[in-house]
Length: 350
Image (cartoon, rainbow, N blue to C red; front, top):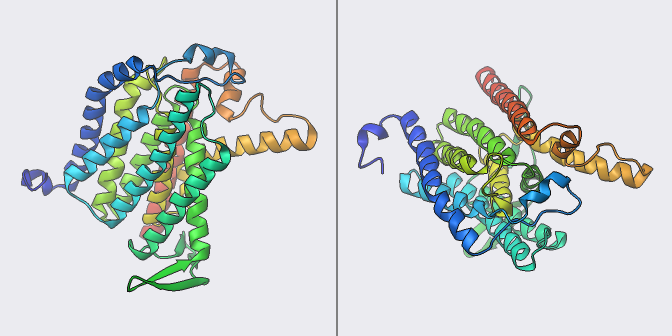
């Protein structure tokens, strides 16, 4: 595309703006059609009976908005023409876990219940995608199996590596690093999924986190990754117009699993694995709240929170959905900015 408009191609910052605006405009224009189609097909959200009682009114609201988000992101990224290995790997994670989420969403719609795939089936699917992305990143994307510790050098997770000759090519399997990639993709895809429990909460936080990764990739002169992250941020912003309270559509597991995997993969290919829990700290908090709730109840019979994930706890405390959403956005912005600042200062000093 930028070959046709060379004046834009000369300015990478304009290219990022084009990617974000393209994602925003496409989702803004296409979602009304998508919502009407979903309503016509009776593809609606199945609400948990044990969730907040105020959420029961959301029963039947169109879901699977993530399908359109992922299609828009892939289209914008491919059309812009800045295509490279790290971008393709990230897009593969996005679409791989997105397809798994689509199967889960479809199962929920067909069975008309809030639970789709079994937990075991979902984890197996995520594991296949995660390991595939890890092997691809190391062997095709030339991602180093080292993790960078700000101001302290690197930690080599490639010390336990198996080499296999296959198809005339030597495949490296650095097991410790592959384990880290596996953990990150499964953790982020599932915790983003947990966060997608209030109108606008997941989409808004993802947009903020993606802007932080776009800034990091841009500073690394990795324009393809910056464009992809900007396209995701723009698409999420366009989706928010229809997902803000009271939501006209939900993203479903298609969006949350796919976008969560993309966040983890961006951290891998930009070598910010240790900063990802800070940049995406809101997802860490959501996941830990569920772990603490379950562990406390099993060990003591008492609950730490009135309801988990933690955004429901604040709802039960009397906060409105909008107040929880905006305050979680603010916290995400602070943590994402802190993560970027820490990376930038460490890079400048190192």
